[in-house]
Amino acid sequence: MEIIELLKKNLLFKGCTAEDFELLSGLFKERQVKPNTTIFSEKMPAEALYIVKSGKIRISVMEGEGDEVGLLELGPGDFFGEIALIQESSRAVTARAESAVEVVMLTRKDFLALLDLDPRVAAKITLAIARLLAMRVKAYSGKLRELLLS
Image (tube, rainbow, N blue to C red; front, top):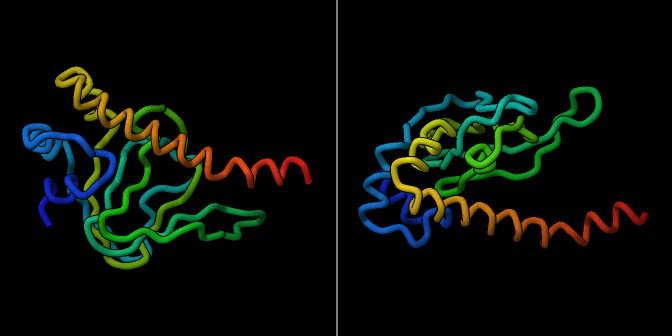
């Protein structure tokens, strides 16, 4: 699958035009990852957004004395690491290839260049990330409330 086709199917790029996709496809880099390879781990600097082109990625957190707890498994079309585009921070989770994986990645540096080059496109992506975060906050607010009140 070509990068443009992958982006067109992704909710982060909803509302982008053909010209936007052409511009964006030039900013993404392809990366091949071998099975059981860590893409990033908790506390590493967050530097890029990733979209899975093929294969499976496991997202996990460390608990206690080196015990890894799986949170979810991602496959083709799924994305992760989106916070890296809008905030300089460290990773809250670990991402590991469960199989041979192909991803496309957009670095924070390239996203900031996009902000200068075409602020309208960068704003669309930023708004999509903000909406996603708002949905997550809403989805998890009940669970957080239970934890805090129990």
